[in-house]
Image 1 (cartoon, one colour):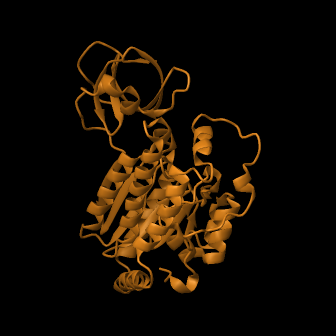
Image 2: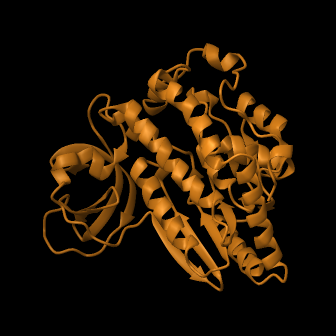
Length: 362
């Protein structure tokens, strides 16, 4: 394909509205990183492109095309994040391509969650897309002028998303895990009261293969669900976890079988029942009390500071090979051997994983 007279490969394409004009391939609008491209009989939204040049990285289309589309007007009709209400339940849905969440996407999602938490609904459902989330956006980081700085901004932005979920005490929160999740995307979902996973989904609750310690409050939310010993095992062994095993370990509370659409319908029905449950007030009071007790014991800011201290060394000092691992992932370079830092046990340095006794399970 050609966009702005450049040969490109297009990905993440959706049908758009009818638009006037007769020039197929012309970019006529943009929104949330996507561009609206005129076709012979209508238009399409193109979410991601990769320029046909050596070393080019697949990126959000507006970012990849840069100044060539900067003058294109913003237009509604495309959104990665939506909010809906149904019988006392608010649903924040997000669908990020391949589950990668850039700094800007994280900021928009945090704002949507903040809005949803302020509504008079009783249950908040956090619903991912085809891929729930794989954490920070490695392609955007790799393509940035200053990758280390972009990585730092990205991890702080996704932490803000996680903070909105963990800190929502005015509603019960349900995570709808209908697609695979990895690294910070798993930890993000664990901040909820209830985590429901679809059969067939695979979780990778670890960071080691990317040479990162990790953040997203994992040292709080993971051991709170599975215990400190199991949390260390999961993050150190860096193995995939199936849906049934996730329930068995305590990573998830319930597994549902069916298509993604059927799964989403059943999760919504579950949330609606939860909203009218006779014990709702007791459950919500328990969430608040647990969060307050945990905050007195060790503030969320302390977990965040410890994790980010490790992440700063990973990102800026490259102490565990993040730069090479990121580059290999983005450019699809096959590893010739297991990196040394992945073959040995890594200590927690300044960060500490909270023990079962130190955190109240929701």
